Amino acid sequence: MEQLVAAGTQFMREVNAAAILSRLRAETSMSVSALAKAVGLSRQAVTRSLNALAEEGLVEFGPLDRDSNRAGRPAQLVRFRAEAGHVLGLSISPQDVRVAVADLSGTVTATDAMQLGPDPTGEQVVETLLSSVARALRATGLTTGDLWFASAGTPGIVDPASGIIKLIPSMPGLTGDVLLRRLREALGCPIYLDNDVKLATQGERWRGAQRPEDSLVMVHWGERVGAGIVLNGELYRGASNDAGDVGFLDLFTELAGESRHPHGLGPFEDRVGGEEIVRQAAAAAGRAGDGVFLARIEAAGERAFETVLDAVVDGSPPALEAIDVVARRFAKGIAVIRAILNPRLVVIGGPLARCGEPLLAALQRHLSGEPLDQPALEVSTLQEDAVVHGALLHSLEEIERTRFGLVRTGRHEGR
Image 1 (cartoon, rainbow, N blue to C red):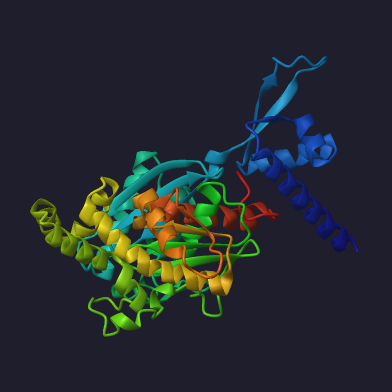
Image 2: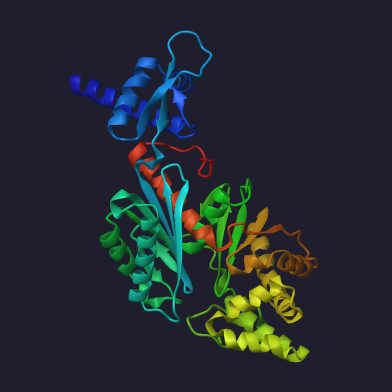
């Protein structure tokens, strides 16, 4: 009987500590009395929990609040030590790697990004990623010992439970457990791997523009095309964790034929992705006699896609013509998404988000003739940084669950 009482007491202390941490993390600092009132516990119970949390380094007692107008003894202030630990958010794409470091409140303390060469091997990708992590940690005076959790997003089909990358046509050298294994060895903290678009969707809802919609689809549009689906406020993964692989839609019978590009592009992304946009821009420049723009595209080499996107932003007629061609095709994909899922909002993320209003205008024009009412369209505010923010969010939620014992009522509440 005594053992059951002890277990119950320990459980209550953990519950109390979790409630205190949850409240304290939302404030710069609070007095012990105000904290006790906010969580509905006695001052004595709060003090016991705070002392235990202070021993763990998670809270810190500050000076007495002598500026307070309250009568009697000045209040004792306490704050959450967000600097007690840090998390990593990692993004891997065929073009680059991106890294973000955040403290336990979610405040980003350092970022880094490094370009990848053409067709990098798996080893080259991992080494570049670890170099980028090292630079970000040095920027804030941290070491891997300060990391509590790291999450990474990659293209392809990923099993989040095992961290195994099952299929990644654009970066085949990362297939299997090589990324998970190397990150564990180098960082020494728990590692989580997931599909990049799914993490980007989480990041956009957390750190992008206000996204209160309980049903939305975020489409990552670049060289490849994939979608993150939110239904009833929750990320929908599908039976094999690859729901939203819209790049494999085959919608264009008039353009039937084998893929003209390497890396296993699906039929849809083959007709709307980065290489096709470059091809359309070059063709439009040739028809317009714009030799200067055509020469810029040819000279850009591996960065031709970025050159065309920059030209869209600058209002180049051939670049806008190319965007209009692929937007007409892309609108067919949005119409399919709408017919099946009927989301309130479709967010365009990835490299194409840079095109902003010209892209949205073209998509809306080509959707105007569809028989069904179409969802609202917006571009991502985070653009290519959405993945790292989604990865940071997952890292923080795992810490809340495993180390703080917090159960969130909403996955995307502010921090």
